Length: 330
Image 1: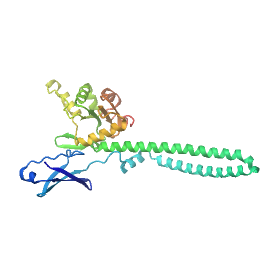
Image 2 (image 1 turned 180 degrees about the vertical axis):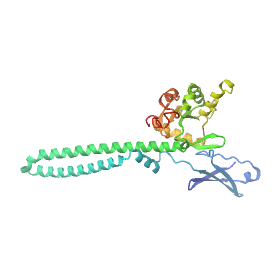
Image 3 (image 1 turned 135 degrees about the vertical axis):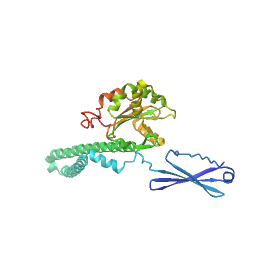
Image 4 (image 1 turned 90 degrees about the vertical axis):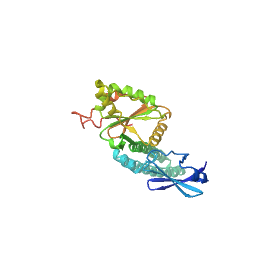
């Protein structure tokens, strides 16, 4: 037995975890197969782990994690730029709101000094009603433009947070086949992703409910990502008989994507549930537009019939014309 302590150092996009175990006489002399238990964030697929004995009294373990996406709670510069592009006149409006607030505040300050002078001088008593009227207008203007500014700023922060969460989602990885792993953003413009997240039984039932809509969903570019949260394997059975061989092939295509680097998926999912005030145990679904933005989400099974009714086909005479008609962005 040995107790290990360590430290984390950062280098560019790679984090190095160095663990030192003492004593090592028993390990180096009698053990060839070493096992280590980590407390904290788990070492998941895609991380490298190496062990190198230095002297008879200690050893160093280096664990590197590269290209880990930043937390969606941090607003990146890319998210801010995208927010500016989506709302190009917001900054102009906010600038004028600040200018009007400053102007009205200055007018209110001048009116307040005039009111004090008029109240102190009885010969100017006739000016008091007009001064009060002007002061009231200035106070009302400050209140109005301050309200508009804070409402605009709240909308800006909400939009940037949404875009940042979408960026984090777009960087998550999917396995297309045994040799190909891609980020979600590689499917922008080609597919409408539907994420089903829940226990294996939830995934199995979602799979069964999607069967009558297989052809229609594929015609609309829908691809499903089953995210199993309880560690069990869902029963996704594809019949290989000659009668339904073509349907089985289509269903495999609909459900061909599989999430990888699961710790990153679970971290993202837990954060979204917290923001939405949903229990961490609740099964949920989330659908994306063709451009990668979120168009719908909810607790329970995906509404396959509603997706078929609302989404336009990706082929035929409507190709390209209705690409932006995926529904409003949440």
